[in-house]
Image (cartoon, rainbow, N blue to C red; front, side, top):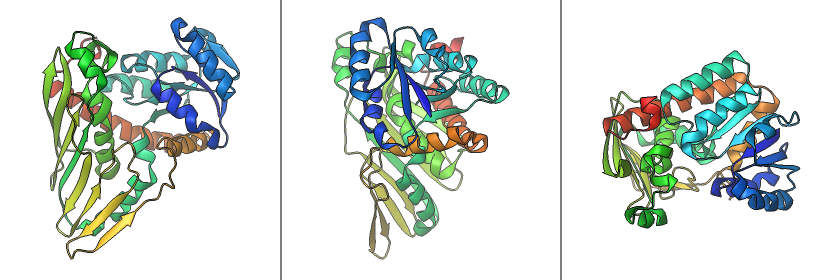
Length: 329
C-alpha cells in the first residue's frame, strides 16, 4: 500500500509513531500547508518519506501514490477526499468521515462508479476488544441500557472562552464535542448494534458550537445515552447493561485497551485482545489487506457502518440546531 499523507497535525504524528510496524505500507509523500513545510520536511526525514509537498495537486500527480490518507480539519474531508478520488486514488479519511451524511453518500457513489476504495480511519470499528465485546453480548442477557461518557477538558476551551476560535470549537470548520469525541461513542454503538430507531441530541452550545452534549438513542428493546464533552471532564466510562450482567470499560471508545464482564452472580472476567498495540494499528493492518486485495466487499461492509454513524451524527446535530456549512450548501 503506497501512501501519500495529507496533513501534519497530531493524528499524523500518531500514525507515524506505529506505521513502521504495519507490514506492506510504503510512505511515498506527505503534504501540508506552506507554513508547515519545515515540519513535514522533518517528519519526512525521521520517517523515511520520499517526497514532501506544499501543493495537494502536486502530490496527487505522483503516480507512485495509490492511496491518500486524509488527516486535515473536519470541514475539508469531503473536498480533499473527492479530489483524491477524481485523481483516481484510493482514500483513507480520518474521522469524522464528512460533515454531513449527504457528502459521504456522494463520495461513496463516486468511489463505486470509479471502482475505488474509500475507507474511514476510525479505530473503534477495528479494535479487537470491540470485536470481542460483540462476541460476548449474549453473556449479559437481554440488553437494557448502554451508556458511554467520553469527557475530556480541552486546553483549547480556555482560548475559546477568551475569543480565540480554534478548529475544534469552530462550527465553520465542523468542530464541536460530537464530531471530536462523541463520534467514537457513536461508532462503538454502531459496531455492536447497528442503526437505532431514533436519535436526539441535547447540547450545551456556545458561539454556535456544541462544547458538550448528550445523545440519546432508541434501539427499541434498549436505550443508549452517549456523553461527549470538551468543556468539562469526568472519569471515562462505558457500560453495556443486561439482565444477566454488564460489560464495563474505563477507557475511551477509540482505544478500549481492556474491559470487564461482570455477571450477576458476582463472577468477574477480564479481557484484553490488543497486546499493547497502538489503538490505530489494527485499522491500518486491515486497510493494507483491503487495498492490496482490492476487497471491495469488505470496504463496502465498513462503509455501511460509516454511513449509519454519519446519519446518526447529522440527525443529532440538526436536532440540537448545530449548523455546519454543509447543512446549508
